[in-house]
Structures are given as structure tokens and as C-alpha cells.
Amino acid sequence: MPSETHLQKVLSGETFFSFVAVYDNKIIGGLTCYILPAYYVTSSYVYIFDLAVFPVFQRKGIGRMLIESVKEYSKSLGYEEVFVQADVEDQYAVDFYRATGGFEEQTMSFSYPLINKQ
Image (cartoon, rainbow, N blue to C red; front, side):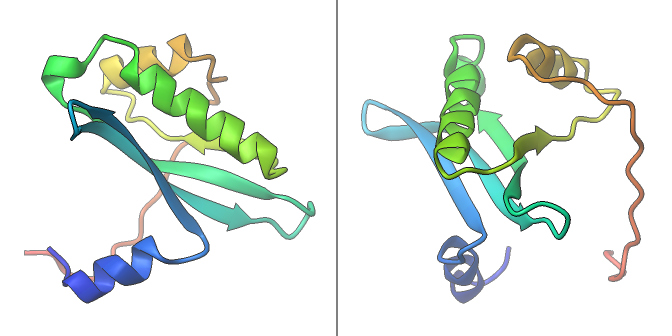
């Protein structure tokens, strides 16, 4: 895990925000987002980087609520679009994003690892 200093730097950055779901004063789910400025339009895009809900709370509308909250928040700030990626093999995630009104696009992601992780 990165240091506390790194975490605070990311959390306080202008291009990062998160939403959490709380039940009984405990965080039970959440998502993290990055704001991606675009050069070809005057607004930005919002990329949902991570979304998770504790298993015991899944299938109770919490993930849907988090997605809707991000969409409403992003729209209120004039952002162009919210998007998220899902691995094709993760059928649960694919089905979830379809059920929350996401428009599926057939694309491929390519990674260029720059650090040898052992």
C-alpha cells in the first residue's frame, strides 16, 4: 500500500472525487472517480475507476445509488460524460452496468506496464 502522504495527495487532488455508502455509521460501499479534461470539448469526462460494495450489501440497490449519485453530481458540474470499464469476463459487472443504464461500447484496452511488479 502507498504511504498516507500519497493517499492524502490523491484524495485532495482537484481531479479526484469519491462517493461512499454508509449504513449504521460504517462504510459499506463506494466508488472513486477521476475527472479527465478533454481538449476537443470545453467540458470534462468522469471516469469511474473503482466501485465496490461489501458482499452482504450487494444486490440491494447500493451500487445503483452510487452510480446515480455520480451521474447527478457530474451533470451538475457540466461534465460531458461518465464512463466505466468492465472486464468482458466479469459478467456480474457487465450485467450491473447494463442494468444501470450504461451504453455498451465494444473497445479494447491496452496497457503499457512501466514498473516491474513482482
